[in-house]
Amino acid sequence: MANWTSKNGGLRIDNASGAITDIGQYINSVSDSGGANRLDDTGLGDTRERSLAGLARGTEAQINGALNSTTYPIFAPLVNGTSVTKTLEIKYSTGKYRVGEVYVTSVQLGQNVGQRHTFSATLAAENGLSVTSVAAA
Image 1: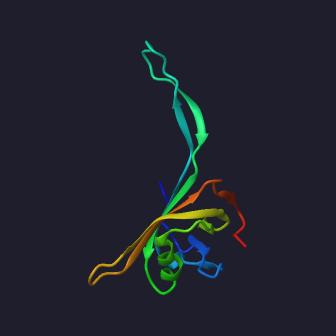
Image 2: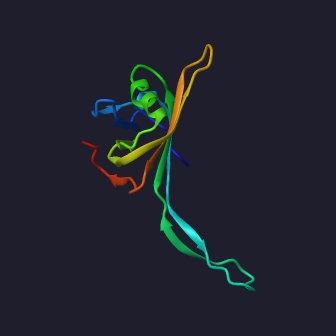
Image 3: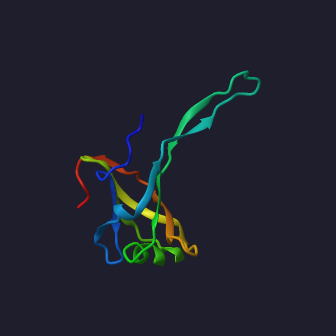
């Protein structure tokens, strides 16, 4: 059974001036995915599908959160796109981090009348995120 997300979890990312900033308190959800692709190796006339290990996919982290005076300057300029990477640190619990350089893609800023302003973004780490027990510097 999964644990509830607690105050031990967190997320830090470069702000507009390049300093790594803790935005964990404004994040509703974080999910990261990766793994290897499979290549179809099924021959003509085979009665069972076969596959081979393919290339490792780039890791992607999907984040959603509240848009405010801390998160707006980080993500709003990225709606227009950038080729600059940001340092990302996902803290799952004490001493369990995933850290790396990411490209920010698919940024969405939301605004609903009478509700919280939100944002979402996909953070693509083409070289993957390192698993470490040490926080990003």
